Length: 455
Image (cartoon, rainbow, N blue to C red; front, side, top):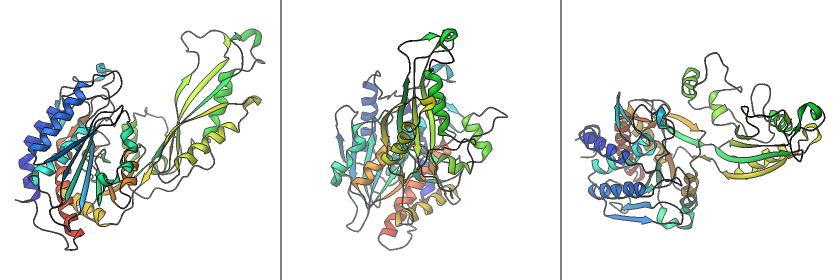
């Protein structure tokens, strides 16, 4: 039986298991119960065993949910090993009044299902299982499976793989924690922007002072802070901090109408910045004010503000060093003296970006596989979001090719109300996974493309 037909025969079971998994509120954030996370873990262990995986272990680290680690040995000494990654925890549902149906009751939508975490990342967990089922637990490559249980909140597992390189040794890895630019468009993600946070604060007075008696001479901390923040961008909205890397983006990107719809930009308003959307979103920097401590409007007094603080989120080029990028922003802010007043600047957490090498046998196999699954050539994109574990796994297996693709799409509302996944994307991802391991095994041995399929 050819690959597509085999996967089609499995889809009813995969959909049912996706519903079972998505019904579990496996939120690993503080304040949420740990039992559902463990329930999701236990369900996946059972599903892996049913798929023919015999070697299943768990990695327990302090202050994080258990990581499922499973292995299928290579079928022959000359077969490659592929590491498959996804995560079974999900974002909190947020304001449930904004959902059209309860977030942990998988609900049919046109062409798919709606539930929290059903796209990010439970669809990709099921896609990995689908490939294993298609090969009845005996794929043509060795397999190492990593299903993480606390990716959304962050965990020490991000930095763990380099400390145990033998466990994570592989020839290629498929990081399935993202997906296509748009439904029906096969997409390989080749870059992840890095991320840093910086806090900037101003204290000018011992306490508030009457704005009528003191305003105009007494230094207003909020005005000082706003003056500083206004220097971060130029008149076009481009980042104006020296030393932050920006390059032309040559891959595929959104159409402007798509981006406006996805971002919810109000009609008639311009986008900020110049250059292509890909350059603004992926190969150039972005600075966002994500928090501001200042008197609220509703209860504001007629007083000069003595203290103000802002938290900044910096996204930077995938290949720029994380500490260097953060340092450029810190230096810019510390060099300012708005109205002659210095700022207190505190560097926060920073995480590196990632840019994948392309052109190796795994990438060639993936391009063939994605074309087979979707019927058209794959697009190359990057993403402004960061996946810290990618760097950890890449350091553990520095010679492995890293592939980023999956069953999500940019319109699936991940991290937002009414998250959904399309069955077409899930089905095609399973087909692509099956075709990838087939083509990669054949190409790795130098035998050319195999025509045997999964039968």
